[in-house]
Length: 116
Image 1: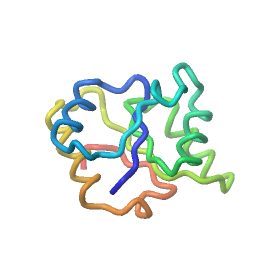
Image 2: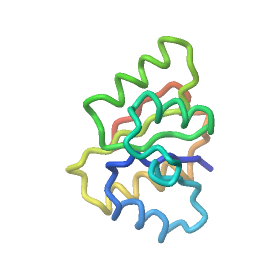
Image 3: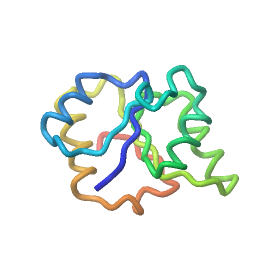
Image 4: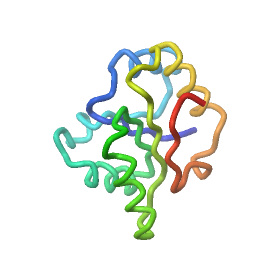
């Protein structure tokens, strides 16, 4: 089972759909972790300490900060980048497919751009 950290700008309908489909899913929203408004490096550092893969729509800055962590040999449990234009249902299905069928160790130091 993957442990996810949902970025603050992530579409709430996707999060709610994931939770409805998979009530036992292990996800935390940035807002609930006390990281609202935190810069990307801080969000990634918190996720690394907690062993959580970050799920975001942010293609502009989050991937480059994740790459900096990897290049600096800092822990980076993974980053899933979901396009804002992806249909909600498709995003839910793909994220749940990853959550139910992959191991957290598969995503260490990886930035994955959806769709699959």
